[in-house]
Image (cartoon, rainbow, N blue to C red; front, top):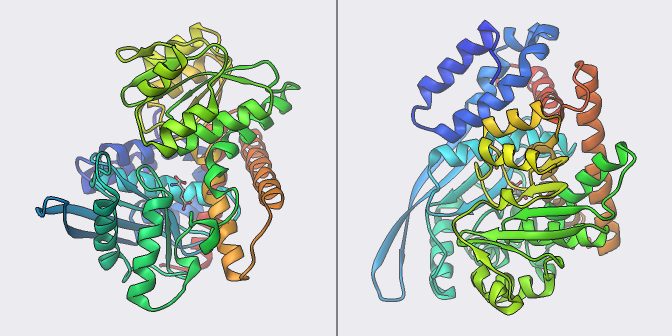
Length: 447
Ligand code: GLU
């Protein structure tokens, strides 16, 4: 972490004081503040209008009880959240996460990141995030349905096509979005397709949305490689996770000629030197919702449960699991083994110490708010299709996604250059994302 200029430091101190105990939120704010020094020097009007203080304070935070009945007839109580962070650029937009670790600090870190990520896509979407500490693991479809219906019973008052448009995140995929949409439709008596994204293709979803976050991350890396006269051809790649982001990152790396040799889940990681067998991985993870040990058994490769996937040597590392999964020690190990590019498919997977280690070693590091923006960008394409009652082909949608990722890479690289730090994608992403939101807020007065 660098030293902040005195004005940014005092705003940061106030953020710590007002949001006590929300460690992930502090980390996400600090990462952005570390890039803003040269911006406020060049644009004192942002400080004069208290833009930065306002960006750090969500426009609205909703916390509610989610009661539901499990299969044995017992009443369960979870906590639901929706943090509507910033609507300067468009309706609030961001996913819902269902995971036992969810609390206000996680939702706020994700919502804060989403503001800048959504801004970088160039699409008209504000920033939000939500979720619950509900754990879908081991729950029957009927339990997940009752939980989603109860969640929507409260959430429906706060969302809408022009207000706030949730989508998926960890623990929320096609099944959950189906139950959520069905209940919203019933409560409102409206077929309001644009209220949620990530829907199924037959009921208002977009082609390529499911694949978009993973594909987009790989398209971003492809741009990084191209700008250095290189390509994925023959590259050895490690992808952490084996959820929606990881699976489609692996698919696109293989399409582009690289080989993904390792992936993981919460039980450990597998190394498959011939390249991850994607059809098998999809069957285990998407169809059976099973553990990676079933993949390891079927392929006769070892599952390592007490080690780090980041000790596996590679040219390109794509952390696609969850926040703070790649520590400083992991970064040092990757650097020692010759990694050249790291791109975050997950949100904030690299710790501040890890980012510093990559920077010092000259590794090209693409932060999540740029590298994983393809998911939400394709959500915005889904909103476009819903608004025009249209449905695009996979080819057209994927071409739009690729173009958006190229534009994001270009604006990060150009901004980094403009601020005298060529190749610093963290600085470029933070400044480019921030500036668009800040200028819109300035134009709209004190809101
Ligand atoms: N949860 C995803 C993200 O982190 C997607 C959000 C969306 O599509 O609205 O960007």
